[in-house]
Image (cartoon, rainbow, N blue to C red; front, side, top):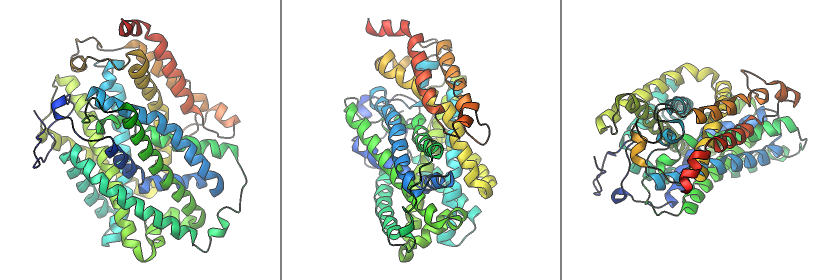
Length: 459
């Protein structure tokens, strides 16, 4: 199957299969718009509000947000360079580290991420549509799910095009909202409190980092059509800039609005932002919809990639046609919609728990994937073997699983979530540093256990 290269191209034809050089196109600058739009969403605004909810002042929320986004965005953007180099989706690359069958584990975890973010996005997108069209939130979420499904089915090129519009609209509206916050009657009190609390500050940094790190499983999906000779620095740089700038702006806005809005904002995040926009309330809601539609589409698209990779692992297929693509995306959307409708009333708490929980399991995967690409195999892969259970990557890589498992287990004493607070985290007053250990330990162990592969890469 080939991507239709004419101007009349509609549905994307490729799925998890390799994109040949003849079909590569685009510029890395486009990555800025994709990741800026995905990050300047209402979900990121709500995440920023959590900094204040967790005990930070508005003053100290800002550096925590920026530090966390930079730290997490640095590691996440490194995945972006894998797209032009390999020309395959992000998660199928896990077969090179975990084995053809072993990669199913991180794929299942990634699928949980996609469905979870999709569902939380439908809750907020439903709120925006409800306020804009005067319908129920359930109807709004359903309509939003249909829109996300359609855009995901059309695929890569159309997602990039839509993100340009969403990014520009979000930038304009977010700047307007910052002006409105700055001229609010309560603005003078925003930075009057300078008390520093170490534990909430560190937890906030981890929250921002986790936001960025959870993009890791699908970063390369949106750079894999770029020409093979695309600059690595440009690919990483534009991804980093868009993601970190977008995430930081949205979270800072959320922290400031939560500080002045309090319970009113937490009760109806979308409605409060609309009211804050004043006469431009409708434009604020449209921007919320555009940004959230970008994020939900990425989740539907990434979820589709994960499901297809899992299914083809069992069936032995290497390609999936447009009809099957539409079916898989629709099924993922239905699951996310069911979750969204069930979780609406307790969204804020559920989202916090979900985001922090995912961090413990995905940072070890990210570390292993990056170490393998940059330092073990040094960007040298046999693409055909990624699709062959009898290829050089084997069925299961015990070393990768050992590094992954230890990377998860080492975090347990340092965990801080509503599900479990580790003894060390408790002694540190709730400060969260588990994700750092997950990265360092998993990456270091994988490197140490891959000496044979490293020698073969040098030869």
